[in-house]
Length: 201
Image (tube, one colour):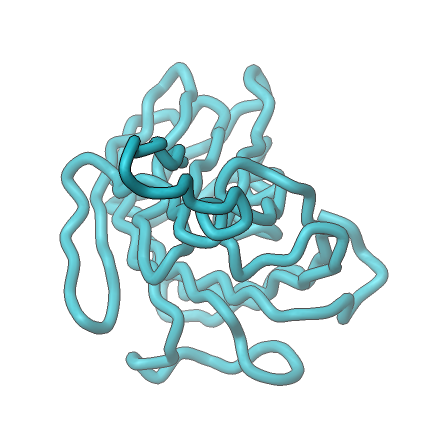
């Protein structure tokens, strides 16, 4: 079953110039964005990236879009497959509206083939943005399409912590451990404001 990176679906410093006053720290933080991923492609509607999942596990980058970005740690993937990711903040592609209200972030995913995720490495990572408020709860919903069948997974909630680029939602990759994906599959993770379930990511 295709449980994708969810559940979980996660700086710069102002310099003082001698002739100008230093930018206030609050303003400097407001201008911070997570770094773009190496190799990501940007459009007006989304940012995309394709990575190769390693048989020994590792970490991949969430394509930065409109101030949302971060990384996901994942366990071993056997065999190694490619994973395509698309980040967006609008439902431009007819994605399912799985939660209550309007999602603040969408992460589309596509695996090039079947793989099995191990338990030899801790899955984790975080989605981060200044638009995510530390101390507030957010809920992740997901839906996968496996061999033509739609499968909903989640939801689960996470309370945002404070990070370098704003709030951080951990547990993005927590559902990958010990999961088997029999064939190529696609899916989407949607992030909503508020705690919409009792299940923690």
